Length: 181
Image (tube, rainbow, N blue to C red; front, side, top):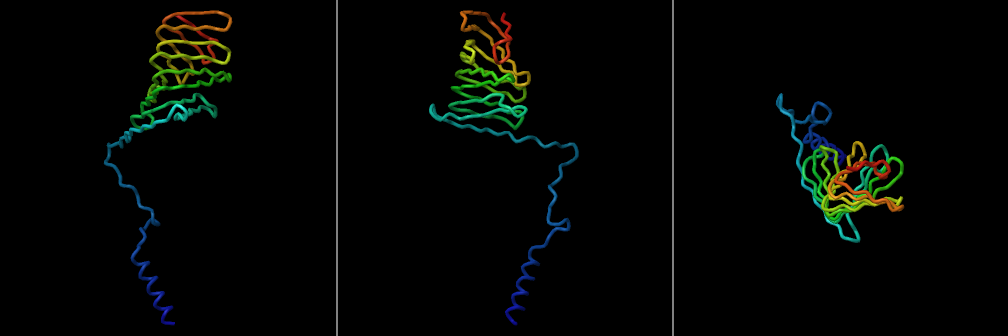
């Protein structure tokens, strides 16, 4: 009997040491002063892969792959939604709505989340499954329109022997709707 009373007294004493707040145990976060908005936390994230095991990123839009990045190294600077991502020794596969795939390689690539652009630089080499090839100094992919834009020393070829050259081009990812200047 004494053990039961002593046990009950210990339980009551422990419960008294852990009082609950009047709102059911949930404490409210500290409030900000009027007119003060919280600023996003700027992060710097980096990673490294190898030639045999690159780092892989997949971007999706409307439940389908929009592009896939394979890279040897990457770095992200900034807050979520406004970050700039830098890639080195990069392969990017751009997936068109029609099922086409444009595979591009370049020494460097940048994704700016504010502008919604993927920019490949340093000499870009690309090809698709239809046998078309593309070479240019800079390739820009607009994530909103899903169009590609090439600048500098642009050369497009197809399997039938066509060869087009210019300084700028715009196209869909399948390279079937292209304009060149």
